[in-house]
Length: 205
Image (cartoon, rainbow, N blue to C red; front, side, top):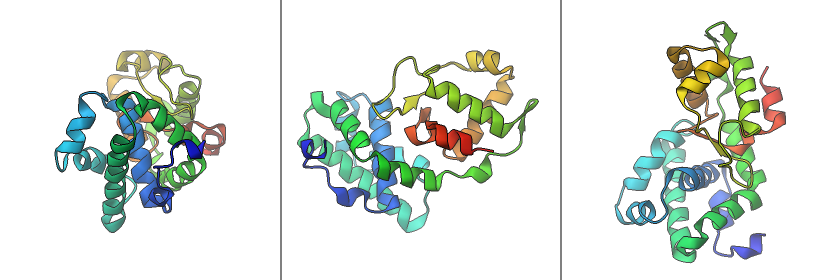
């Protein structure tokens, strides 16, 4: 419910750059940050959150838009810390992703680079393998229950299991992960909900 978080500014998601800044920040906080120890450091040390965000936002954005996205992500983090208690962080992040999912989804999918989903991995074409992988992720095969309310997920499966499941070598799996990351389908080991929707998976031809 939007009214449950009156501090969240919709001006932070009124264009794609800002929305991506908020969404990447939200997912990093949700999956890859220890609330008790990491968040105070990220807020206190100038430049640290920017260093976290820049590698992933630069997949989607360049120049002024990249700067705008990073600034918005940092502003969002500071507002979260100011207005929510430590015990409310996870619920607040889930609420924002769910309440504003349509906007976040559209911004994210507009910047997925489908042109990078090319080539062969072992005896597979990359695209059918990615479709199979995303279907497996969406069925919670790899995240062991660690998903958001909107269904964003984190890849917790070790390389060895991916190698066995798909019949790939270690080098093949590394190449596969690289395609997922440079296309924007996955960043770090996080797979955002928009690319796990059936409609997106089926659109990969």
